[in-house]
Length: 442
Image (cartoon, rainbow, N blue to C red; front, top):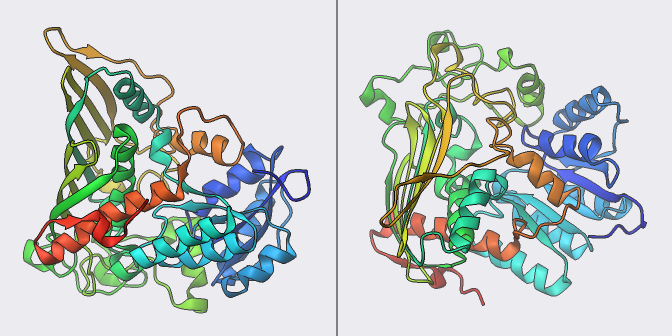
């Protein structure tokens, strides 16, 4: 990716919520020799002002701010080479299309978009312009996941027959999707798109395969109005200023998180967005307990389960092949302590710090007719999504060589999205869904 000036690559960012901070730090602190942050765009001026103030703490001058509706003017006026998209998921397609047709490349947070129409819009813009979209599937950069891919590519288990993948979001992390805009499927695509898209992309990447057919079942079991049945409901709409939220372990206390207060509570007057909704309040239309069966172009199958209300945070992956089995077990936090139940996962900003509770990770190869072998993995940490965020930034922003092909393309983004969309449709119809019936990719 080259700069229009021949100097540092000029980046602008649209969407200045909490996830933006990781990209901002990477641009102005970690990769300032190759990259330059030149502008912010958002629907909320207060959030952009907060990020500009934090830039000052990093020793960087403030950058110009633009309303999201003026994105095209920003891209031209600031001579932007790369747009970083960290806005609400259902706005991605429009922002990406605008940037590509303005002659920019794009780095976008996952999911690439939330529906098949937006996906087609992006793919058409890529084809029309020849510009590049890279999707920030940071889990590809986790050393554990890299090692698993390397072992599969080297034939450690032979031909892959099946994958079982279980992901557990604890009642601190999982609850957070039900108090903010993610609770509305029109904005997020639901957890099959917003969260499981990470996991579906990993399986596509690990197997070097594409999804063909998906059958799924999902429901809202724990959050939303189900909370009254389970005895967790409290009678308030949002936590801030609500006495009924005082003893609720599911309540997010924005006052306790200075950066979240500045980004959201102090910015509410501008757009009315509330970051601390009651997770058991009415209006949730996404699922929290989901099971998926998928078939791939190689003939392999995947069984997948996502639970958003678990007592601990972690995941298990089992890959069965013609020569043995690989097992990955990761416990990110072995419980949720009462003291941190009303906080966010690990830190005020998502994924930036490790949780205080204990955790571990083990990758085991079980070949036929031989004892199991624990596979050593270096570089894995309990912060920054297993060390993946920093490693991703080195590739997407720093220009580090990428021989493993971790930088996901627009097509990769589409394949992950379509698996989630097929699961959502199967939830509704009760029938298997052919991925090509949603969007036929070449």
